[in-house]
Length: 292
Image (cartoon, helix red, strand yellow):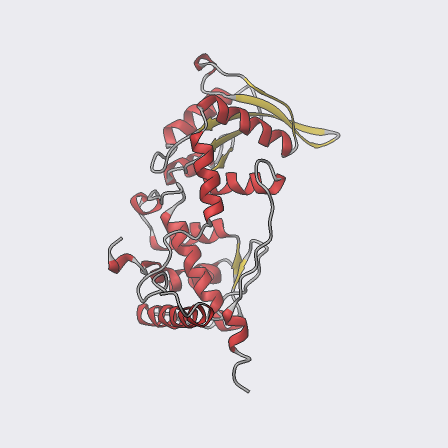
């Protein structure tokens, strides 16, 4: 990655604050991404660009922007899936220069923290104009890599197990190219009185191989008259056009599960993963106690 692109995520600081203000000072990550894209009229070439995990580069950079704004007290640090402006954030106006100042400040704080913790090691990871490319752990990348290493049939079977563990009943793999691209079916019971027939499709894709709008449309056509809900599961991601097609008004909605959401589902039901707790020191919290 060229040096100039190392901290390009700082360009989202201002748009992120603007998006949250538009949403009433808080929003779910997907709402924030969509609002930024709408406000800036971002082209598909930006929205479809992916990292090695198959996740969206745009989403990853906005998530990094959010992390720095949390450290600087502009966003709340809640871990409950909602991004919320603080009082400071509601009134903040961030220029490109200010964004870089915030970035450099927290780079220096974390560099000093690491230096104190491991004085014998060089801190190359947090030099000026640099940041880890992906806001995901090695464990997440390992799981994505493992899923991509499965055979196509093996991936369908593990998705079947995941759906069963997630509350679906009567889950079975249909198989065969003659079934209109449908890999399996199941039933989702909402309560004793309401249930939905669900069809699913599994795409074990490598990074950069995104599910297209046409593939979403073909899947929807195959499920019409056969089920109320459809799910496409992939180890990669979806083009922006595919996401729009999946949520098109007047057409049956297709649920999209990309690599990030897929990992979350495995972790939620603890399928094929072992839970462990790791705690890292948060320097921002302790900085205010250093003086006085």
